[in-house]
Length: 317
Image (cartoon, rainbow, N blue to C red):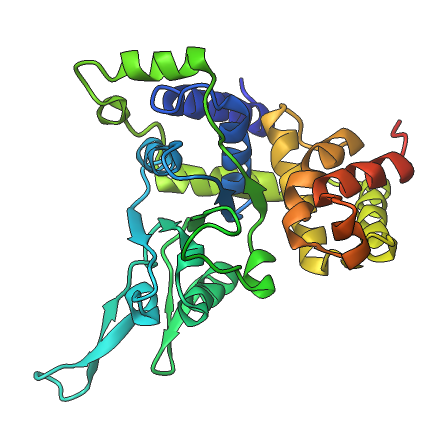
Protein backbone atom coordinates (compact mmCIF):
# COMPACT_ATOMS: atom_id res chain seq x y z
CA UNK A 1 0.00 0.00 0.00
CA UNK A 2 1.40 3.42 -0.97
CA UNK A 3 1.65 6.19 1.60
CA UNK A 4 0.69 9.71 0.54
CA UNK A 5 4.29 10.78 0.02
CA UNK A 6 5.32 7.72 -2.03
CA UNK A 7 2.13 8.10 -4.09
CA UNK A 8 3.23 11.62 -5.05
CA UNK A 9 6.65 10.30 -6.04
CA UNK A 10 5.19 7.51 -8.17
CA UNK A 11 2.73 9.83 -9.92
CA UNK A 12 5.46 12.41 -10.53
CA UNK A 13 7.69 9.81 -12.15
CA UNK A 14 4.89 8.75 -14.49
CA UNK A 15 4.23 12.40 -15.41
CA UNK A 16 7.90 13.06 -16.17
CA UNK A 17 8.21 9.89 -18.25
CA UNK A 18 5.30 11.06 -20.41
CA UNK A 19 6.59 14.62 -20.86
CA UNK A 20 10.05 13.30 -21.83
CA UNK A 21 8.49 11.81 -24.94
CA UNK A 22 7.99 15.34 -26.28
CA UNK A 23 10.87 17.17 -24.58
CA UNK A 24 14.16 15.35 -25.06
CA UNK A 25 17.26 15.72 -22.89
CA UNK A 26 15.91 18.27 -20.40
CA UNK A 27 15.16 16.00 -17.45
CA UNK A 28 16.45 18.40 -14.78
CA UNK A 29 14.38 21.35 -16.07
CA UNK A 30 11.27 19.15 -16.32
CA UNK A 31 11.74 18.10 -12.69
CA UNK A 32 11.97 21.75 -11.61
CA UNK A 33 8.87 22.70 -13.59
CA UNK A 34 6.86 19.88 -12.03
CA UNK A 35 8.11 20.83 -8.56
CA UNK A 36 6.96 24.43 -9.13
CA UNK A 37 3.53 23.24 -10.29
CA UNK A 38 3.18 21.03 -7.20
CA UNK A 39 4.22 24.03 -5.07
CA UNK A 40 1.43 26.10 -6.68
CA UNK A 41 4.08 28.36 -8.15
CA UNK A 42 4.77 30.10 -11.44
CA UNK A 43 7.73 29.54 -13.76
CA UNK A 44 9.84 32.05 -15.67
CA UNK A 45 11.83 30.63 -18.59
CA UNK A 46 14.60 32.93 -19.79
CA UNK A 47 15.93 31.62 -23.06
CA UNK A 48 16.41 32.15 -26.77
CA UNK A 49 13.52 31.33 -29.12
CA UNK A 50 13.10 27.84 -30.52
CA UNK A 51 14.46 25.63 -27.73
CA UNK A 52 11.14 23.97 -26.84
CA UNK A 53 9.51 26.19 -24.22
CA UNK A 54 6.06 26.07 -25.85
CA UNK A 55 6.37 22.33 -26.48
CA UNK A 56 7.16 21.75 -22.81
CA UNK A 57 4.15 23.79 -21.65
CA UNK A 58 1.85 21.95 -24.04
CA UNK A 59 3.21 18.59 -22.90
CA UNK A 60 2.53 19.35 -19.23
CA UNK A 61 -0.97 20.62 -20.04
CA UNK A 62 -1.83 17.37 -21.85
CA UNK A 63 -0.34 15.02 -19.29
CA UNK A 64 -1.92 16.91 -16.37
CA UNK A 65 -5.29 17.35 -18.18
CA UNK A 66 -5.13 21.14 -17.86
CA UNK A 67 -6.93 23.71 -20.00
CA UNK A 68 -4.23 25.59 -21.87
CA UNK A 69 -4.04 29.13 -23.20
CA UNK A 70 -1.18 30.99 -24.87
CA UNK A 71 -0.62 34.66 -25.59
CA UNK A 72 2.22 35.81 -27.82
CA UNK A 73 3.07 39.13 -26.19
CA UNK A 74 3.82 42.11 -28.39
CA UNK A 75 3.58 45.87 -27.69
CA UNK A 76 0.00 45.99 -29.02
CA UNK A 77 -1.38 43.32 -26.64
CA UNK A 78 -3.78 45.03 -24.22
CA UNK A 79 -4.40 44.24 -20.54
CA UNK A 80 -7.99 43.29 -21.47
CA UNK A 81 -6.61 40.57 -23.78
CA UNK A 82 -5.22 38.95 -20.65
CA UNK A 83 -7.83 39.66 -17.99
CA UNK A 84 -10.99 39.97 -20.09
CA UNK A 85 -13.46 42.81 -20.51
CA UNK A 86 -17.13 43.76 -20.09
CA UNK A 87 -19.61 44.30 -22.92
CA UNK A 88 -23.24 45.49 -22.80
CA UNK A 89 -25.79 42.71 -22.46
CA UNK A 90 -28.86 43.64 -24.55
CA UNK A 91 -31.05 41.17 -22.65
CA UNK A 92 -30.45 42.51 -19.16
CA UNK A 93 -29.26 46.03 -19.91
CA UNK A 94 -26.23 45.38 -17.70
CA UNK A 95 -22.67 44.43 -18.49
CA UNK A 96 -21.54 40.91 -19.37
CA UNK A 97 -18.02 39.68 -18.64
CA UNK A 98 -16.01 38.12 -21.48
CA UNK A 99 -13.16 36.12 -20.04
CA UNK A 100 -9.57 36.79 -21.06
CA UNK A 101 -6.81 34.34 -21.94
CA UNK A 102 -5.60 34.06 -18.34
CA UNK A 103 -8.79 32.30 -17.19
CA UNK A 104 -7.38 28.84 -17.76
CA UNK A 105 -5.37 26.23 -15.88
CA UNK A 106 -2.01 26.65 -17.60
CA UNK A 107 -1.29 30.07 -19.09
CA UNK A 108 1.74 30.43 -21.35
CA UNK A 109 2.86 34.05 -21.50
CA UNK A 110 5.21 33.89 -24.46
CA UNK A 111 7.91 36.58 -24.68
CA UNK A 112 6.35 38.50 -21.83
CA UNK A 113 9.09 41.13 -21.85
CA UNK A 114 7.98 42.34 -25.30
CA UNK A 115 4.71 43.63 -23.83
CA UNK A 116 4.17 47.07 -22.35
CA UNK A 117 4.55 47.51 -18.60
CA UNK A 118 0.78 48.04 -18.30
CA UNK A 119 0.04 44.71 -19.94
CA UNK A 120 2.73 42.92 -17.92
CA UNK A 121 1.19 44.23 -14.71
CA UNK A 122 -2.19 42.77 -15.73
CA UNK A 123 -0.80 39.39 -14.70
CA UNK A 124 0.11 40.46 -11.18
CA UNK A 125 -3.28 39.98 -9.50
CA UNK A 126 -3.84 36.68 -11.31
CA UNK A 127 -0.48 35.27 -10.22
CA UNK A 128 -0.70 36.43 -6.63
CA UNK A 129 -4.39 36.15 -5.75
CA UNK A 130 -5.83 33.65 -8.23
CA UNK A 131 -8.36 36.13 -9.58
CA UNK A 132 -8.78 39.04 -11.99
CA UNK A 133 -10.80 42.18 -11.39
CA UNK A 134 -12.61 43.85 -14.28
CA UNK A 135 -14.83 46.91 -13.75
CA UNK A 136 -14.66 46.39 -10.00
CA UNK A 137 -15.86 42.76 -10.12
CA UNK A 138 -13.48 39.93 -9.19
CA UNK A 139 -13.50 36.72 -11.20
CA UNK A 140 -11.76 33.66 -9.71
CA UNK A 141 -9.36 31.70 -11.88
CA UNK A 142 -9.86 27.97 -12.48
CA UNK A 143 -7.87 25.70 -10.21
CA UNK A 144 -5.20 24.51 -10.48
CA UNK A 145 -3.61 27.58 -12.06
CA UNK A 146 -0.02 28.07 -13.20
CA UNK A 147 1.74 30.66 -15.34
CA UNK A 148 4.70 29.66 -17.48
CA UNK A 149 6.19 32.87 -18.85
CA UNK A 150 9.08 33.15 -21.28
CA UNK A 151 11.33 36.11 -21.78
CA UNK A 152 14.13 36.68 -24.24
CA UNK A 153 17.58 37.44 -22.84
CA UNK A 154 18.08 41.04 -21.75
CA UNK A 155 19.17 43.22 -24.65
CA UNK A 156 17.30 41.29 -27.35
CA UNK A 157 15.59 43.53 -29.88
CA UNK A 158 12.20 44.87 -28.80
CA UNK A 159 12.44 43.75 -25.17
CA UNK A 160 12.30 45.56 -21.85
CA UNK A 161 13.01 44.37 -18.34
CA UNK A 162 10.14 42.88 -16.38
CA UNK A 163 9.26 45.04 -13.35
CA UNK A 164 10.69 43.90 -10.03
CA UNK A 165 7.20 43.33 -8.59
CA UNK A 166 6.48 40.83 -11.36
CA UNK A 167 9.84 39.05 -11.16
CA UNK A 168 9.21 38.45 -7.46
CA UNK A 169 5.97 36.61 -8.24
CA UNK A 170 7.72 33.88 -10.22
CA UNK A 171 8.65 30.96 -8.01
CA UNK A 172 11.63 29.88 -10.12
CA UNK A 173 13.61 31.11 -13.11
CA UNK A 174 14.88 28.37 -15.43
CA UNK A 175 16.59 27.99 -18.78
CA UNK A 176 16.26 25.12 -21.25
CA UNK A 177 19.31 25.94 -23.35
CA UNK A 178 20.48 24.21 -26.48
CA UNK A 179 20.18 20.39 -26.58
CA UNK A 180 23.27 18.25 -26.88
CA UNK A 181 23.96 16.91 -30.40
CA UNK A 182 22.81 13.46 -29.26
CA UNK A 183 19.54 14.82 -27.85
CA UNK A 184 18.96 17.00 -30.90
CA UNK A 185 19.35 13.97 -33.14
CA UNK A 186 16.90 12.00 -30.96
CA UNK A 187 14.46 14.93 -31.19
CA UNK A 188 14.56 14.85 -35.00
CA UNK A 189 14.15 11.07 -35.17
CA UNK A 190 11.20 11.11 -32.75
CA UNK A 191 9.29 13.40 -35.10
CA UNK A 192 9.54 11.21 -38.17
CA UNK A 193 6.01 10.26 -39.08
CA UNK A 194 4.28 11.75 -36.03
CA UNK A 195 4.36 14.61 -33.55
CA UNK A 196 5.19 13.24 -30.06
CA UNK A 197 2.75 15.73 -28.52
CA UNK A 198 -0.14 13.93 -30.20
CA UNK A 199 0.85 10.70 -28.47
CA UNK A 200 0.62 12.16 -24.98
CA UNK A 201 -2.43 11.43 -22.85
CA UNK A 202 -3.69 12.61 -19.47
CA UNK A 203 -2.35 10.59 -16.55
CA UNK A 204 -4.46 12.19 -13.83
CA UNK A 205 -7.39 14.51 -13.37
CA UNK A 206 -7.20 18.11 -12.18
CA UNK A 207 -8.69 16.99 -8.87
CA UNK A 208 -5.88 14.47 -8.44
CA UNK A 209 -3.29 17.17 -9.19
CA UNK A 210 -4.89 19.41 -6.57
CA UNK A 211 -4.65 16.53 -4.06
CA UNK A 212 -0.94 16.21 -4.89
CA UNK A 213 -0.52 19.95 -4.29
CA UNK A 214 -2.30 19.65 -0.94
CA UNK A 215 -0.02 16.76 -0.01
CA UNK A 216 2.99 18.96 -0.78
CA UNK A 217 1.56 21.76 1.37
CA UNK A 218 1.23 19.34 4.30
CA UNK A 219 4.91 18.33 4.12
CA UNK A 220 6.53 18.79 7.53
CA UNK A 221 9.19 21.49 8.01
CA UNK A 222 10.96 21.45 11.38
CA UNK A 223 11.91 24.60 13.29
CA UNK A 224 15.66 24.17 12.59
CA UNK A 225 14.97 23.93 8.83
CA UNK A 226 12.70 26.99 8.93
CA UNK A 227 15.45 28.86 10.79
CA UNK A 228 17.94 27.75 8.10
CA UNK A 229 15.70 29.09 5.32
CA UNK A 230 15.27 32.43 7.12
CA UNK A 231 19.02 32.66 7.79
CA UNK A 232 19.78 32.18 4.09
CA UNK A 233 17.27 34.85 3.10
CA UNK A 234 18.57 37.29 5.72
CA UNK A 235 22.10 36.71 4.42
CA UNK A 236 21.02 38.04 1.01
CA UNK A 237 19.98 41.29 2.71
CA UNK A 238 23.32 41.69 4.46
CA UNK A 239 25.65 40.79 1.58
CA UNK A 240 27.78 43.67 0.29
CA UNK A 241 27.33 42.49 -3.30
CA UNK A 242 23.52 42.70 -3.11
CA UNK A 243 21.81 46.08 -3.19
CA UNK A 244 18.37 44.64 -2.44
CA UNK A 245 17.99 41.21 -0.93
CA UNK A 246 15.23 38.63 -1.15
CA UNK A 247 11.73 39.48 0.04
CA UNK A 248 9.56 37.54 2.53
CA UNK A 249 7.77 36.18 -0.54
CA UNK A 250 11.07 34.52 -1.44
CA UNK A 251 11.13 32.87 2.00
CA UNK A 252 7.72 31.34 1.34
CA UNK A 253 8.76 30.28 -2.17
CA UNK A 254 11.91 28.52 -0.95
CA UNK A 255 9.85 26.71 1.68
CA UNK A 256 7.20 25.63 -0.86
CA UNK A 257 9.79 24.44 -3.37
CA UNK A 258 11.71 22.54 -0.68
CA UNK A 259 8.47 20.78 0.26
CA UNK A 260 7.84 19.84 -3.37
CA UNK A 261 11.36 18.48 -3.82
CA UNK A 262 11.04 16.48 -0.59
CA UNK A 263 7.86 14.84 -1.91
CA UNK A 264 9.50 14.13 -5.28
CA UNK A 265 12.29 12.40 -3.35
CA UNK A 266 9.75 10.26 -1.49
CA UNK A 267 9.73 12.06 1.87
CA UNK A 268 6.98 13.83 3.81
CA UNK A 269 9.46 16.08 5.62
CA UNK A 270 12.03 18.65 4.46
CA UNK A 271 15.76 18.27 5.09
CA UNK A 272 18.43 20.99 4.69
CA UNK A 273 19.55 19.37 1.43
CA UNK A 274 16.16 20.15 -0.11
CA UNK A 275 16.60 23.81 0.82
CA UNK A 276 20.11 23.92 -0.64
CA UNK A 277 18.86 22.31 -3.84
CA UNK A 278 16.12 24.88 -4.49
CA UNK A 279 17.72 28.02 -3.06
CA UNK A 280 19.58 29.38 -6.11
CA UNK A 281 16.83 28.78 -8.71
CA UNK A 282 14.19 30.22 -6.38
CA UNK A 283 16.03 33.37 -5.26
CA UNK A 284 18.48 34.52 -7.97
CA UNK A 285 15.95 36.37 -10.13
CA UNK A 286 14.65 38.37 -7.16
CA UNK A 287 17.95 40.08 -6.29
CA UNK A 288 19.28 43.49 -7.30
CA UNK A 289 23.08 43.48 -7.32
CA UNK A 290 25.21 46.40 -6.24
CA UNK A 291 26.98 48.46 -8.92
CA UNK A 292 30.30 47.25 -7.51
CA UNK A 293 29.30 43.59 -7.97
CA UNK A 294 28.04 44.25 -11.50
CA UNK A 295 31.28 46.04 -12.39
CA UNK A 296 33.18 42.95 -11.26
CA UNK A 297 30.99 40.76 -13.45
CA UNK A 298 29.45 38.88 -10.52
CA UNK A 299 26.28 36.88 -11.10
CA UNK A 300 23.44 36.44 -8.63
CA UNK A 301 23.76 32.65 -8.83
CA UNK A 302 27.44 32.84 -7.87
CA UNK A 303 26.73 35.07 -4.87
CA UNK A 304 23.97 32.75 -3.66
CA UNK A 305 26.28 29.73 -3.86
CA UNK A 306 28.77 31.62 -1.72
CA UNK A 307 26.00 32.32 0.81
CA UNK A 308 25.16 28.60 0.89
CA UNK A 309 28.77 27.91 1.87
CA UNK A 310 28.81 30.50 4.66
CA UNK A 311 25.47 29.78 6.37
CA UNK A 312 25.64 26.61 8.46
CA UNK A 313 22.96 23.99 7.78
CA UNK A 314 21.34 22.35 10.81
CA UNK A 315 22.16 18.75 11.65
CA UNK A 316 18.90 16.86 12.04
CA UNK A 317 18.62 13.74 14.17
